[in-house]
Image 1 (tube, rainbow, N blue to C red):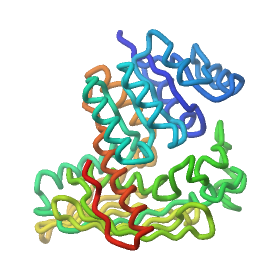
Image 2: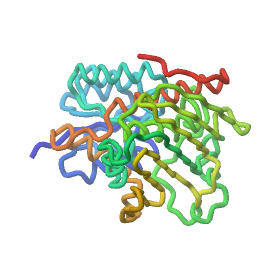
Image 3: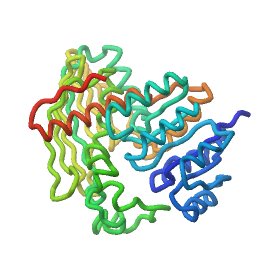
Image 4: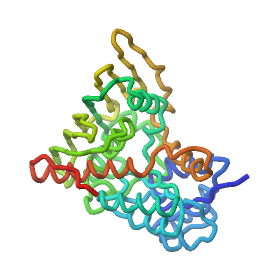
Length: 358
C-alpha cells in the first residue's frame, strides 16, 4: 500500500492538536519528520508522535530524500518562504491559514503549485463539514437563484491571544477552561499578538476563515472591501466590520470579534437569493434552506463534525494519492488574502478599497 511521506514544519500548538494526530491515525500517511526551532523541542515532538527525524530548520527538512509532502504550520510570517521552498522542490504542501501575509505572496504560491503540478491545500476545516458541502451545492446549482446578499456574524474567544497573555490567562476564569486538559503545547505569546509575526489580529486569525468560506460557498471572488477595525488597546485588531462586494454582484456584511466569552461563540451565515434563503449556524451545527413556503431543516451535526480539524490533513493525503479532489484549494486562500489586504488598507484609508488585480 502506498503511504504518503510527510513532514510537519512549525510543529507547535495547532500542529500538535490537529495535523500530527491526523497523520498518526491515517493508514496511508507516514510521519517522516517534524521541525521546531530547538532540537530538544523537535525531538520531544518526534518521539511523542512517532516521527523518525527531528529537524530545527526548513533546510534540514528539504534535505530529506523521500518526502512527498510538507505541512506548514508555523507562524504566518514564515508561511510564504517555507511553502515556496517546498513547492520549488516539487513537494505537495498543506499550508495553515492565513495562507500568507500578502495577496501577492498567495498568488505566487498558487501559480507555483500549478506550474509544478502539485497539491497546494489551505487548511480550513469549515470547508469539510456536511453542511458546508451541501450549502455550496445549493448555492452554485442555482437553488437559491441569484445570491444577492450574505450576512455573517463570527465571534470567538481569542482576545487573550491578541493581548499576548500566557495560556493560563487566555480564557480568564472560564469554568470550561479550568476543567479542560491543557494542550500538548501552548501557543507562543507573540504568535497572535505581534503584527510582525501574525500579520495582524482578528482579521488574519479568524476573518481568514470567513473570507475563504465566502468564495468556497459562492464560487465568487472579492472585488471591493470597506472595513473598520478596533484594536481595543492592543497592537492588533480585535473588533472587525467589513462590507464586501463579490465579483458576481453579491453584497456581504461581516461582523467579527475575538472578544466573546468562551461559552458563547458564533458563526452565523445567512445567504439571501432571489429564489431562496439559507440559514447556517456553523458552531451549533445547524442549517435550514427556505424555498418559497417550504423549509428544509438539515440534521444537526454531531459535535465531532462541527469543526472537523483532522479533515484538511486527511484530504491532503487523499488528494496526493489521487483518491479525492482538493477540497480547499489555493485559490480560496488567495481570495481570503485579497479580502484581508483590502480590509487592512480600508481601515487605514477610511475609504472603499478595490481588491488589487493580481
